[in-house]
Image (cartoon, rainbow, N blue to C red; front, side):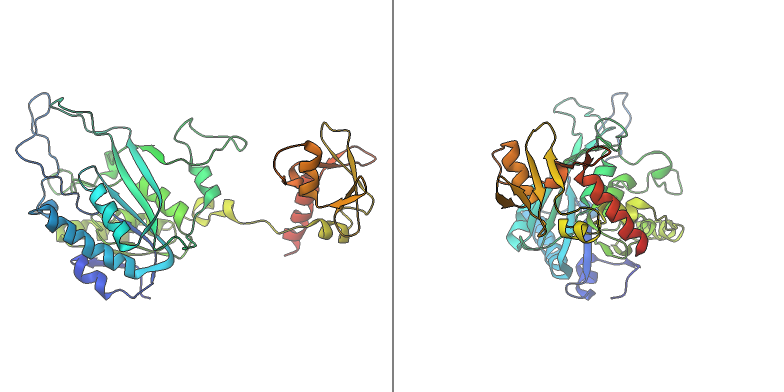
Length: 369
């Protein structure tokens, strides 16, 4: 399918031109239908430039629901069976969008809270400061084998305590704290005013694309705006299709994408999620890493087991695989533990962990490939 397309047009028209089951990842930042009225004043009395653009105005809830249903139907059609979609919205729209997605057959993976570290204040002081937006991450069905770079997500998880060490990297959670677009990243028009009222931060798109796609995937944005999605997709070595109706945004965004160069590193390649070569106990016996009769012991236990020719362990006259035997000796409730994490092999020069021996063999395999 043709990709790396920037399309100046209505997504309800342009989406129909895309092939069925052709898109790997969709990021959608649709109109929120903010329903703002009157002028909002800052504390010092100046006007606040909020979202009052024509493209965000709808006559009624049924009209907004119809619009949302139409573009989501097309997204469902073009998304690959194992692809995924992210939709972002505020409290005014995300519940409406979510209900429509469920009715269309989308399967929710996560809802993610984008916690804005520098939100716009509530100038009137009449309600809580609105400091977050919600993202829905979904697939076409519960059976979709969607792409998730789990270990890459851990590498990007710096929200809580700054930069983690290799030892204490934690699972990425569903609350992402990052600032709104500002400074040099915020695009300005010819008069120096912000170009787009809802421009999303590059860091947000970087994270979405990094954890839910791979090099060469096609990333679609039906509401391209200033082309943040296309810009980050290109930078990360993905292909892209971005649709934007407003010519002003399109022209600025097109220039932005054209000036972007690919910057491919470990995150973009998801090297952290590359699975190491599979190594079994039998493989280790065949390569003389282990020998029949080797004594296996669990740390802090006086119990021993001996290695059999079939790769199992002889323990008290019975044969067990390394995982079941580890759980038995440690006396845990689980039937199995990861034996590579618990066994040590008795050697003349000292005990050696089974995990270390496996990694040594993996390194040899990798060098020989």
